[in-house]
Length: 290
Ligand SMILES: NC(=O)c1ccc[n+]([C@@H]2O[C@H](COP(=O)([O-])OP(=O)(O)OC[C@H]3O[C@@H](n4cnc5c(N)ncnc54)[C@H](OP(=O)(O)O)[C@@H]3O)[C@@H](O)[C@H]2O)c1
Image 1: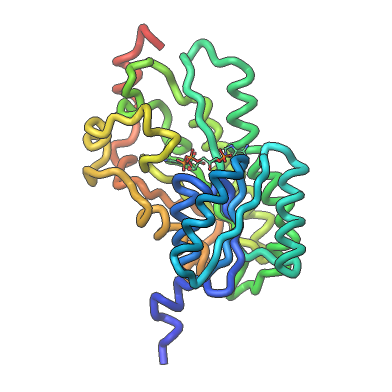
Image 2: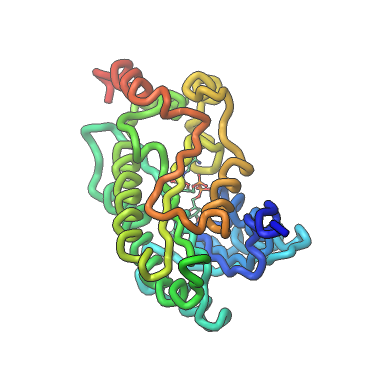
């Protein structure tokens, strides 16, 4: 009795099929690893085939119970999103239980000199591709859904940068005096996209939520991250890691998160408790330089 409440059942992904964009590196790889360890068949999709194959081999060497399959694609191209969905549909009887829209990019620039190509590149991946990927997968997600008890899940990788304004001092190690304003606004748009999608998709049996991480070391931030400063900006005094990101993803993707939709889960060691002071300090320090 009460077996359904055991963590290994409540958080299990046994038999589930997942797609993680950008699943070959960083946060996406951590989530894919956790999903494989908890029973899911995980498709990882991004541009760099060699990298994906290496990551898939590493995850498959963990001994299951799930497995990992790489798909090479550039998801900024709408047709490539459709190709990924078609490929999974053919292999999985038209079904996909979980879509993690994780691929993302940042391109810091001086405040007054943001080239148009920066807006285009960052918004194309962080916002527009999330929409096309989700719409391409929608028929598969609807077919896999067992709503209302066990709906299908879409998770969008947002950021605390999409919740507050300004820049973290700890992400300007080279003292380049650049702002991530384009990235910040793109993540705010991604959060809004998630809430809008949730309005329409939840009644169709597909939950949509956002994970908004604070700083977790990855390829995206390693060269700009000043770890010492980051400790001062994070109340818990440490950076995030693979357990932190995987815990949130497992919760939202499994039965445990079945009644959660249209929300944003912040995982940031309390960073936003220090709120706007973070960006304000940076702005004052760089007043004449940005
Ligand atoms: N690390 C952090 O502190 C942090 C904090 C908040 C939010 N995030 C978010 O977490 C997500 C993952 O970032 P990360 O930190 O793990 O950095 P990362 O390792 O650089 O991951 C970015 C991923 O996006 C993929 N990607 C880039 N362009 C693509 C394209 N055109 N088509 C398909 N995939 C593409 C990359 O793979 P390919 O190069 O093979 O295409 C890569 O796997 C991003 O959305 C980021 O904004 C990260």
